[in-house]
Length: 233
Image (cartoon, rainbow, N blue to C red; front, side, top):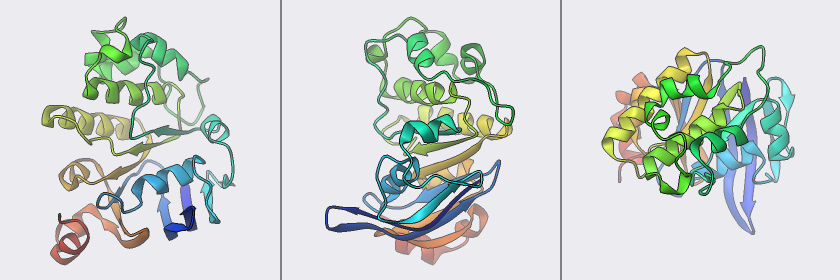
C-alpha cells in the first residue's frame, strides 16, 4: 500500500534522512522506532508532503505522490495525525470532527461520529466541549478521530503515546488494534517499545536518519543487541 524508496531530506544544510526505505502492506500495523531526534517525525512529514525531500520516491496505492501537497495526499486517502495534535481549541468536539469529514471510500472503513464514539467513549461524553478544555490525552484521541472522519485508506500516527498517562496509552493501544480489525493500514512512529509491541506487526528502526533494522516485532523482541544499540536510553 505504501512504499518509500531512497528518501533524502534536508533542513538547510543538515542531512536529516539518508536513503530511507520502507514498505507497508494493506492491513498492516508498522512502527518506525528510534530515539528522540532519530528522524521519525521527518520521515512522516516527508511522506505526507509537509517536508519536501531532496530525492527519493513515495508511492501510495501504486501512485507516486512525491512532491504532492498535503491536502492532495489526504484527498486520496492517506491520513496524518501530527505529533503536536493541532486540534481547534475554540471548536467543540463535534465541530472538530466535522472539519475532517470526507466522502466514504469503497475500499476503506466508513466513519461517522457515532461509530467513532464507540471507539472513543471519552469523546462521546464531551461532544460540546471546546477542544481547548480537554486534557492532552483527550486531545490526542480527538485528533485521531478527526483524521478518521476523512475515511482514510491508511493513517500515519506520529508519536501517538508521547506524553500520555499510562491508562491513556493503553486506551490508545486498544484504539489502534480496533482500527486494524477494521482493515485500516497504520504506520506509527514511536519511542515507546512496549507500546509498539502491543500494536505493531513489523518494525523499522531509524538512527541518525538511516534505517538500521527491519523485522517483525517477534524478531525484535528476541534481538537484545539491536534493542540495546538503537533503542536503549
